[in-house]
Image (cartoon, rainbow, N blue to C red; front, side, top):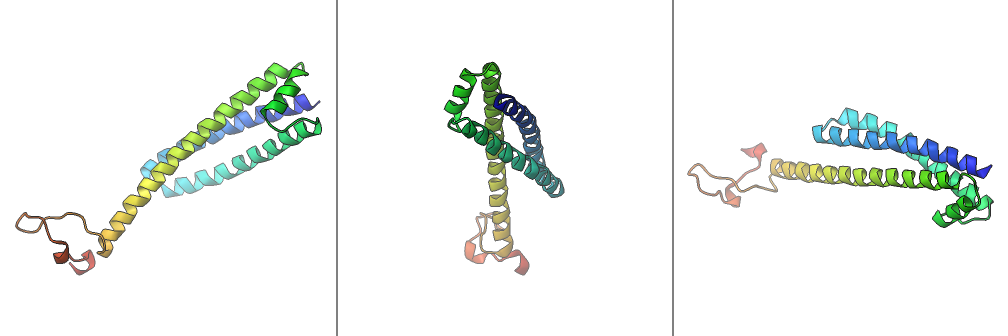
Length: 155
């Protein structure tokens, strides 16, 4: 009985993780285009998927603990060893693990894009506020001295 429940949870989570990966890739595209309304929509779609994955992870752990097994890979292997669906259980677990790893890597990629965009925005804001000035040239074509530069609001 526990094996079929676990298989069902794995099957659902594989579909959920695939959908999550698609959303993370769409998020990357929206980040690249700086499409904030689309980013907000994608975030709203991601949160329920993450919650569902968490709930199913808890349910899988509980199912293993109910069988007096550890709630990790070794517990799943022990259950698979005494189950006729053992090979399928392990294959589903491996597939889900690979999908979740791809989601993690894609999410890290998106985080790098966000940090790069934040750094760029902070640099532009610093220039506009007059606190941070890039290497500019004066009217004679030589490098302008920082003391001679003024914020854009005073130019």
